[in-house]
Structures are given as structure tokens and as C-alpha cells.
Picture 1: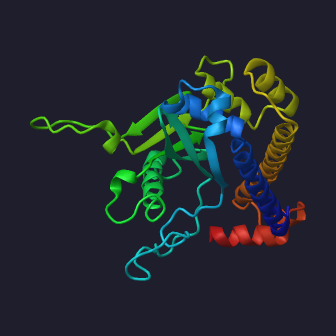
Picture 2: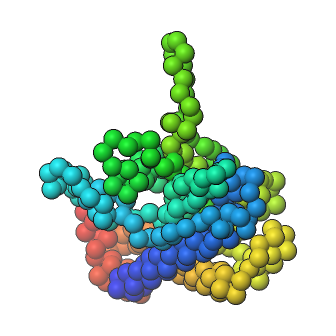
Picture 3: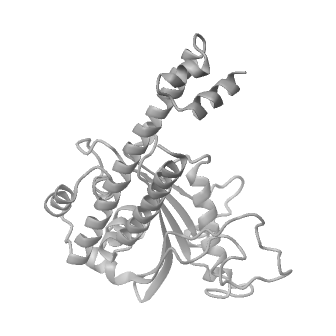
Length: 314
């Protein structure tokens, strides 16, 4: 396999993964799926029906709003470059939207962010990134939800992280991180709504679909599985998990399945070819301990490759 073909295959896999990840965001942004996630993972929605939750979902952005300061459309006060992060690329929230919850005689607004990630520890703990995202969701609210000292108008934010391929020890689990009041000395308590402004939810999916679990883990594990084909996936989602699938949703699932199959097959083929190349190099290294470069070339090996390995040994 030439270097050009190897690079082309690698780029093809990357492009396939990017297209797959984009399709995952599009699918998760379906309002019925969002409602299922909210009912399972957001306390304020636990006792509402799916159709009621769907009606609460308002402005929806998919891969649009920038995360880092200075990259968004928010107003930046102070020095021009004060809030820019040097060297940071453009990062966007996967999915971010507003919800309005009916509470007695009023409607309570919250802001929800949903992120889909393959690993739970890509060089750092995702929960720490989730805390940063909730902080950014709050800072975005200045001039939108409150100005000057109107801090009581800050809306509660959620950042929900779906880990598709977590470490084995974390598979099939859900963890919440939130602000909790603790009285250290004397009774200085305030009402919960004053400080209950952010929550990070980590949901870790599973590989074994037969393993006992919470409904939302079953649902997302099937929905986002890269190994289940379209027919089986739609059957489980509709018949076993009760999802009402529209034609648009079926088309999105089909596209996602096709993309995951393409990425898998390209990756396997690339892996096989890289493995063969590694094996050839190992064989040449061993032969060089007994044979000359010319003798090895006479056996049918590429002269440039043999000479390169011989030079590395010297």
C-alpha cells in the first residue's frame, strides 16, 4: 500500500467519522428523542409526559453556538482581547436549546446542552469539561437573560454528556454533578432556587445490550450503536423500546447505520494493510541479521524499503 493510498484511506475514515458524528447530532436533536432524554435525566421533567415535554422545547441549535469566549456572538466587555483564548480552535456545543416548564402561574425557563462523546477520558475527565460548558451557558446569559446586577434572573443550565464507548468500569451508569448547600456554621440557609443553577449529567452506555439497565441507557445504547444494522435497530426501537419513528427519523437512522458500516469496513481494511506492512518490516529486520540488502531484494522485497530499514539499523 503506497503512502498516498494509506493517507487517502485515513482521510476517508476521518471524513466518514465526521459525517457519522454529524448524523448523530442530527438524530439526537429530534424533539421526541430530546424529550425522552429530558424525562429520564432532568429532574424537572420526570413527572411529565413525552408529548408535554416536546411542547416545552423552544429554540434549538445544533453545532452552531461557539463555546469559548470571543468566538461567539456574545458581547465582550473590557479590553478587546480580554476574553479570547489564544491557540484554541473553534469549538461548538453539539446541541443547545431552551425549555419552558409550566410551574403554577408561570413558565420557568432552563437551558439544556447535550453532548455525544465516544470516550469518557480523552486525555481529561469529561465531567470537568461539562462544568466548563455549564459555566459558559451561564455567562452567555448576560445581556440576554439579565443585565447589571440582576443575578436572580440567571436561568438554570444542564449539560448532559452521552459517552458511547466508556471505560469498562463506567459502562451502564449515570452520574449527576450539581451544587449542594452545606451549612458549616450557624443557620445561613437560602432557598434552593437561589443556588440550584447548574447540573452536569454523565450517562455511560453499554456494549452488552442484554445487560440489565435503566430504560434511557437501553434506548441510547441501541440508538447510537455502530454495530446494529438498520432493520434490527428500528425493530428494537419501535417494538421493544416504544419509539414512534417518523419517516424522517428512519432515514436519519439508516444514514447513520450506513456511515458506521463504511467507517468500520474502511478501518478494518486499513488495519489489515497496516498490519501486513508492519509484518514485512519485521521480516526484513530479521533477514538483515543474516543476509545482505541485495540478497533480500532478490527475494522480491522492495529495494527502497530494505535500504531504509538497513540504514535505520545502522
